[in-house]
Amino acid sequence: EVAHVNGHAYNVVGLFFTLVRTLVRGASQLLTSVAQFPNGLYALVILVPLPVTAFWAFRQAGLSSRATAIFTIATIFGTSLWPTLAQCATGDLYSINHIFAAVGLFLMGGDLLGRRRFWLAGIGLCMAVWSGQMTCLYAPALLWLAWRSPSIGTSQRKMHAIASIAL
Image (cartoon, rainbow, N blue to C red):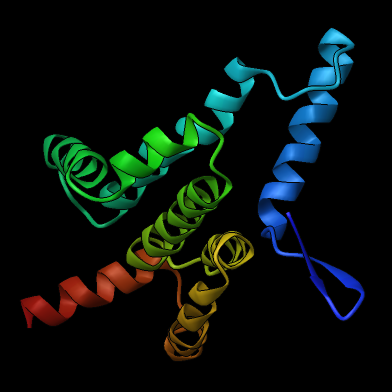
C-alpha cells in the first residue's frame, strides 16, 4: 500500500508488519524454496501470539490460572479482537496491524503489572507503535512509570510491600 502525494510515494503500512512479513517470507524461502507467505506459517505468526501474550499479561497481574484463562477467552471472544482475527484470515492488513498492536500492548501491560523490567514494556510499545501509530500516546505513561519506579528489585519491592502491610 502506497500513498502518492505530490509525486512522492509513501509507505502507509506499519513497519512491524513489514518486518514480520520479510522474516517469515525469508524463512519460508529457505525451507521450501518458495517465496510466498504460506498459510500455515501465516496463521502461526498472526494467531498464536495473541492468546499467549494475553494469558501471560493476565498472569503477570496476579490472577490465578483459571481466572487468567477466563479473562483471556473473554478478551478475545468478547471484544473486537474476534472479528478482527476473522478479518486477518482474509489478509486484511489493517486487522493484522490491529492484532500486532494488541499483542504489543499486552506485552507492555503484562510487564508493567508484573516484574517491571521496562525493556519488555518498551518492546511491546515499539511493536504497538509500529503497528498502530496512535499507540505512541502510551509512551508518556511508560516513561513516567520508568522514572517513578524504585531502583530496587522485584523481590525487594514485594518484601517492602509485605513489611508495610504487616506494620
